[in-house]
Image (cartoon, rainbow, N blue to C red):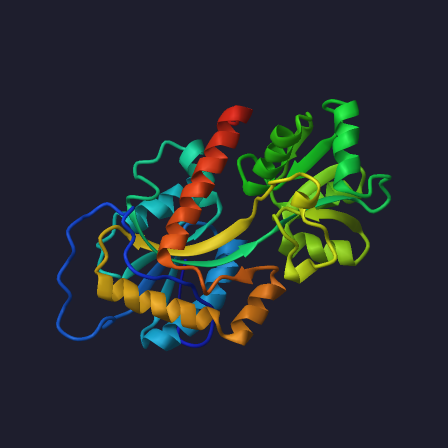
Length: 329
């Protein structure tokens, strides 16, 4: 599916070229200033999901700033690896980019990739970070994370927690909680946040990890109870909800979004994109729109910050997946 946009939206942060990126031939820029034609951004997931929604919020302002149409192309399949490979194998001229979510990091451990998730890309910017939320039924006797952990410790395997599917960040966050506290819970995968929260309201499962955009409105309505956001500090979008790290020291997991291109993009092009993304993300209207989806914009993040962040995410989820013996089968 393709769409072309030419007006306002959102953006990302960057800096100079990162030493972690493997050297590759840099194509000569055509005469004249880049960009001289439409830019394609591949979204490696189906339309309507969180990655698609955030990308479509950003695209019009990016287009306006760059003076060229942004063509968004959905290439779903295999947990985002199909679209990622298409983008990464494209010419590194700046005219094809890839909008990635946090699952880009866990895919490195769940799939046999044909590319290196760091060396095969040029990181352009981290768009924003969003918490997941640990939820229970509003009628549950469990009112905080400590009580849930204590109950799970006293009743191994009896705490059932739902998520949007095997290998996703919500599932892995539940696995991380088990590994950090030494408790044993039972994972129940669903096809999305909605079905998981519906079963939680119906009393079919005891807890669930869900995206902030889905979970916070349900908690505010009183239909579910939010025990914690999964960050190491409270989220400004839900300041009344404790951070998981307030109970489980060092706990931190999140969903996030970023923009990358193929390895070897020319530095002037990357610098232009970087500056544009940072400028767009500083726009108060953009920040407000993102915050409406419980996403905190990260305009201060440099390209080096983004590389280090992705490396840490890949290392974390690889460790969790291996320790939990998680597979997609």
